[in-house]
Image 1 (cartoon, helix red, strand yellow):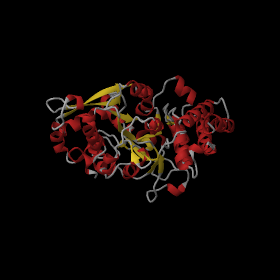
Image 2 (cartoon, rainbow, N blue to C red):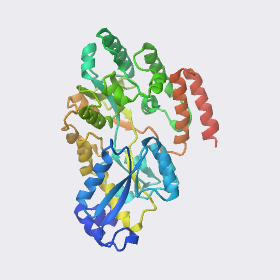
Image 3 (cartoon, rainbow, N blue to C red):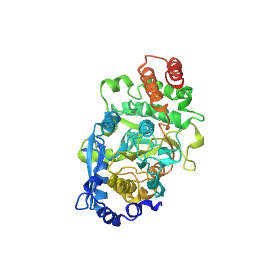
Image 4 (cartoon, rainbow, N blue to C red):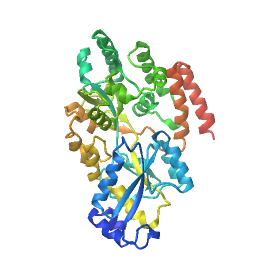
Amino acid sequence: MNRSITAVLGAATVLSLALTGCSSGDDGAGADGKTTLTLAGWSLATTPEFKLLADGFHQKNPDVTVELKEYDPKNYDTQMIADLAAGKAPDIYVQKTLKNFYTYQSGKQLLDVSDVAAGLKSANGLSSYQVDGKTFAVPYRGDSWVIYYNKALFDQAKVKYPDGSWTWDDYAAAGKQLTTGLKTAGSKALGIYEHVWQSTLQGFALAQTPGADLASGNFGYLKPYYTRALDLQKAGAQVGLGDATTNNLTYQAQFGKQQAAMMTMGTWYIATLLSQQKSGDADTFEWGIAPAPQADKSTTGTAATPVTFADPTGLGINPKIDKGEIDAAKAFLSYAAGPDAAKALAAIGITPANTDAAADTIFAVKGVPTDAVAKFAFTKHDTKPENPVGKYTAPLQNILNDLHTAVLSGSKDIDAAIAEAQDRAKNEVLNK
């Protein structure tokens, strides 16, 4: 651990003493030695992680209060970029996706927190925030995409549960079998729900295809994934993109209200599903998780490491923070990415970046599946980023979102859409 901020990033019990020694309010601490930090968050009424981190840090460091500033989740980055430009952004703000990390870092909107990173023993995704040997954010969440499945609907359709051996072809076949079996049993549920996001297909394609490179502008690796999705839509085994968009379907309701027997989604949904089953917003049923389907058999089975994807969720510091608050802000980052916060996050079903500290905790939560396949899916995977950090990532992903909509809506065939996306990538992004 780097000891340049010894009192702050060392034992939490000495943080308040260090901050008491800070001088004036102009430097961030009040005359009474107390400090207030501001932290960005979104959907605070339904997303408990931000208050959990703020309260947990305050309990360990009573001289520091962390106040939350709420943003619109759909427009988080747009609003944050505007607030940073206007000097109104909070002291600490979330890196919601890797897609925009390059924009923040290259725009000098993130403080160097390499000293915090040096003290972290285990934090999945830390390397994603490193540029030229320096670290500009630390991950506190480390989600990965898995299969969620409804055991009752599988039983009703007489289909075996996913066991970690599935390829995408196995997943598609099971989806069709589930749809047929459920219809025969008198249920209107479909075998699969695939949400409208481009990541449901493109994230897996990029992660699982050897040699796939977003920045290359060559997108042929997407074709098998879209071919399979179109076939499932045509077979009626999953809702079409047009219907899902027109009807404003949510993945929470489709799975939580038992409209689909299975879906792929990030591990963040564990906390949401538990909360919604408790509140009644989701039905009460037994569910499980399994490793994401794989491109081929080489990465299936519990003897192998399944390949999946997800971006880490990180925290960075606004460079315009009062100088006297920097140590406190770094201490908050150290706490949020550390083992105590990991256990607290896991206790409400959230996957922390420090999964080593949290595995036992999350499986002790009532309602979380504890079978061997679920534990394997949660703890063992090669999680690759959905948005590899780079200056071309955001504009290329925007082009690929257009491809996603065009193909699944049926307005373009796959080959034509890929060709158009490649031309746009070359002319609009890569040659600029």
